[in-house]
Image (spheres, one colour):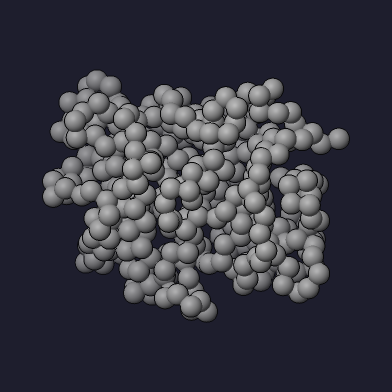
Length: 358
């Protein structure tokens, strides 16, 4: 995202100029910049500006609406949506249109992204992170307002102010079709299937946690970020998928005993609010295999067009550049400084804005 685009979005959305901005190192579905606003004083507030970020399930940019809905119906720590809108034209005029037309500004939340150094965390800190993550997922899945009667993708409503459920653009692992419909697990349409809104990419890199300089205990989750691929799926499948991202994916790098401790912590906290049957232990490996197939299908879906391939290349570069901050433009603030040193003060009510750059 070009500096001029960031500056215009922040100016129109928040009525402020940008003093400096940088790109976060960790991945995001959307093109993201963290901006320090040009206000008097040394402790200038920051906001997160995102452009694009089409859902792999529907091709629609849904993150601002999802975050608003999650904030309104749960107590999960999500950033406030300060403003969102379209770069040119109204929602009614453009329909779904080009995902890059969509932008949003979010509250900057304090905390450290644990993804790049997950394996280097102190065991007690990592266990607290994993336990917290399990508890938050359980609370999300237990929210009645986020329960549905079928699985599917989320898309913006015709007027752009709400969300609706629709069939996904590609293959859905919980609605796989024959011959996989005969698998011994609950799938779409089965009595045991419990469709709920879930994050879509729930993993350490999409969380912020408290550090040693925080009032909270180190490892406590302070924010859940990047909801651009949220969708509706079976709760057990989403839980198994999350276990892979927090635990199973580190086989060979974390000992079996440590992974078992993390698994018990994750499931235990999930079960405090979410529904977890004893037979889940038997079904989880099948759901994890379905997730592996789903991941492959999603990457193929993303790579079908040039913008998707560009998104994949950007995320690969972010992985390769782990630990580096890439400036969007020259900053009066050191780009190597810790971006979680402060949290913006003041407030701005959420609003949707449509404007044309001229």
